[in-house]
Amino acid sequence: MSNLHTLTKNIKSSAQSAGEQTRIACSPQVVTTTGVDKLKVCLWVDWFRMNIFDRLRTHKLALQESNHDSAPFDFDIYQDHYVQTRYNFNLMRTGTARFSYRLISGDVALFLSPRSADSVLHNVQLEIGSLSCQTDFKGVFDNIIKMFHYLSGKVEQEIVSEVHLACDLLGVPIAATSFHYEDNWICRSNNFTYHSHRRKFNSMSLGKGDIMLRVYDKLLEMSVRRDTAKQEFFAKKWGLSSPEDLKDYDVTRVEFQLRRPVLKEFDIPCNTVHELSLNLQSIWIYLTESWCRFCVAPVDRAHKNQSRSTISEMWEKVQNALFFFSEIPAKRVRQVIIKSIDPLYDQVRGLMMTIAASKGHAINDIDFIVKTSQQTISYVLRKFFFLDEVAFQRKMQQRFNECYATVL
Image (cartoon, rainbow, N blue to C red; front, side, top):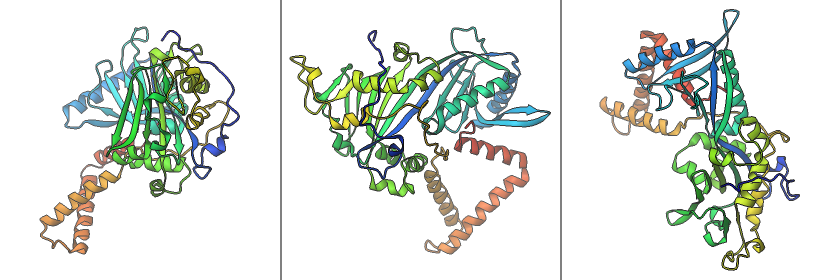
């Protein structure tokens, strides 16, 4: 990978404008810029006061003595003896091999260790999931750094360890891209993987490990996983009125995964989140023009005439995706719920039908079944609330932290 370099150049004149990219109602086969879809950052933080770890240790010990897997943990920022700002997380029962404490807020994960900032191994790791990245990955990161500052923590070093960049081809069935034709690819990796769903091409990948390309049917992925949160989010991002409209469209996702061994070999700096955000376009140009490209016909490898191969029109659309976040303000999409709710509806329905059956209701007596379900829900919630209001509120805060990334 020693020859891995990124060149900066102007966007091709055929690139869509920023406004056109965000609306699905434009011409078919338009590339919509999705940008950063996942981000991992390693941090070395110098804590001037270690009292935050005293709190974490106390809460974790209490959690391990209980039967719960997690509990709400708030980072409260005081001003004039009043809480000015509150960052809500769920503290998990166990940490990891390298970090004593694992905290979750929506799809944002924070891993903390009390070791010194002088250690070779970082003492903080931040992982930002897809929906929070899509909403405002830099805003999430800046808020976490601000929280550290309030808690008397100073960031001494910052290194981006992994990033996923993606764009979406709207109105394009994945089969129409022909990306599953292995002989048409020019790539610096020899690893090619093809996947099908019910004997139909639904995803492929190039590369392995530190740098990798994945092309897949985005709607199929969300449907199989029953990820209603992402369906709602992307329906709005793509300009649709509701998630129900997704069934009338095809969306092909083109996504690159890059890890630290690759990022550190770029000519341009990609160490910090700020440097990464400034150079996203250059990275995308390298990935889609130098690291790999898709041609209209099989490549003549025997005579080494790859440079004469004609790039497919579909791949040119991918190359033309815009990633100049520092110059083109992205349309901010309001953060939606992270947790998928539809599977929970199914669980509640099954539980309520079991309880109604235990009461001896007729199997077609819908009015009494609904009435029994309403009475049951009201009884168990009110009983919990009046028996221990503090525990009720903490449990509700825990559920809220699971549903939303509160650091946005």
